[in-house]
Length: 176
Length: 251
Image (cartoon, rainbow over all chains, first blue to last red; front, side, top):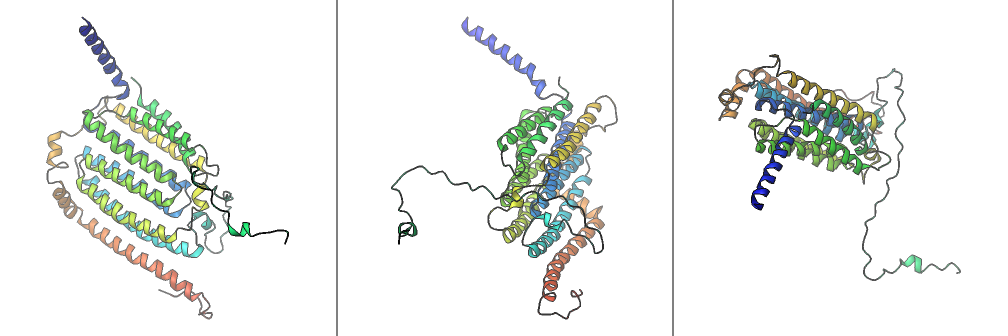
């Protein structure tokens, strides 16, 4: 009796789970269409995360990494479209995207190297005023404050003997 | 049944706030809260996605997508640019896995070889050459983090809602093309000799484009060399050795 009662409880629990499942996987569609939908969403997310980085970061190299990430998002979408149309065009476009990204990385890193050797800094904000001769200066926004970084000391457990104070402290006699 | 567009809108708002808290800012607090917000937003996005055919395909896709997206977020938000580059490499590996899952074997390998093998190493090389001692102030404070996060994630919201809307309408109308059958796919895109088919297409129909891409690579190579050499010679000619020289050397 007890066993059959537990079985009915298990069956009821499974029915509950099955009734809850369509909430999480909210739509059911054809496999290829679902794959296309998911890849488009992931591609859009990669693109927009790269956009956040490209707009807001100030390190030139991180900006270029973000731009490459945007290209990756587009590549994902292209490959998904290639599958759903059963055509190699999207994948071939991605091959060319990779080639162009390699060219872009080569030229961009040469430029970064030159700019770094001019100012000894990778900060893109130092080049706000880059313009042709004779043009009025761009009314740049003030840079964010340069705050000194808070040092983070390692937290060590107290153990062992206390180290001796440095010699310039022990040898210092103010009355002499 | 929940409309996935509502989930996406909610996730967009949460993701914008979370990205703002995660980006490097002057007041370096609230990063844990930002990470939690972004995690909830990613969960909402995942809840809105339609399920694939079986749970194994679902699991593989969700794991690869989560690795890709989380590594991408870490790339954008980490303070140390070396860590950014390494997270970007992980994101590329996740992307390569996603490409493999959708059947693009050659592109997956090319992504790993070209991006993670060559471009990323070049980035790291320049980073090691140009990185100052310690963490620079421009890595700790970013431009307009709130505006950047809100604007970019708003674009994400528009894109996802538009995509979901298109797929919801595709059930009623015939605007969307019929999905290909498995047999057709195995004739072409998922052919067992996938790379051979891709190469035949690339060097057949797109041969001129391949030649143009080769020229582009050559031009980029020469251009990169000229940029560095020109800067070096320009610095020498403007130095004290050549006070009479009229301008930078002509190339």
